[in-house]
Length: 104
Image 1 (tube, rainbow, N blue to C red):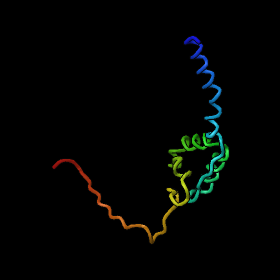
Image 2: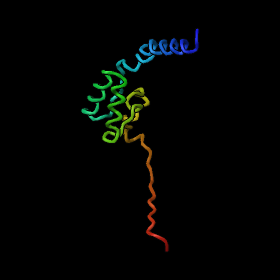
Image 3: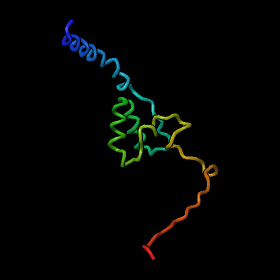
Image 4: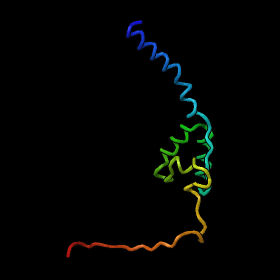
């Protein structure tokens, strides 16, 4: 077998196996939309029902509008970023604002 034939054989095998390796991204995805606005949660669920790729595209195109990333909606409910904490459990934070109006 010549070198060219071997390259063609490897390329054909790679093309034939591509649907097998790429099929996971086209499956519906389970999402956690707790704490999101209802219309945003509906759009996220609709994109996730289509495929993981559709969800990633939706998140990418709306990232500046909703400030969400794929990890925010795909993590389990216990680790979710979108979930808000009760007021009693929140820490009190003190802020110090330092303003510089130029050199003296």
